[in-house]
Image 1: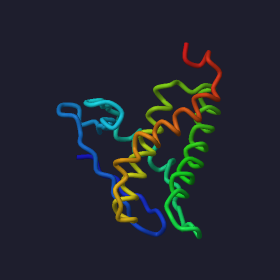
Image 2: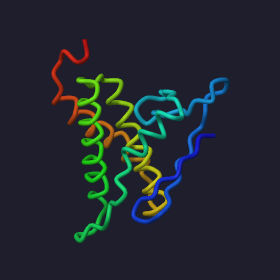
Image 3: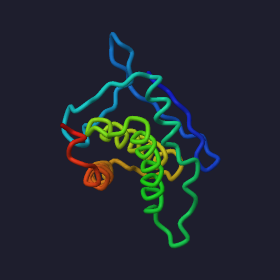
Length: 144
């Protein structure tokens, strides 16, 4: 079992993921996109990504609702993508998918543990919104 704790809105948010038998690598479960769809990642890389994606503060929406949480996460994801591009001079579709999935993992844990709500029905829609928004901004040659 992979475990990571993030501090968001002064609350401990625990990330718990299954690990692959044999390798011990954390499994990013993306069944919300397609049944059985999974990806493994090294524990160190995942920990670094989660730290970088941690917005630290979602705050409260003065108008009610939790849309601000999804938008704040998107802003943090943008910063991580910009840093990745600055370092690697490109963003592969697979890298973007990994970052977006990791963002969904953070949102899922935050919704459940802090807001007391399920994020399950919002995962696919949020993934598609994040992925499509950023992917459409990249030059096509980055994925050749």
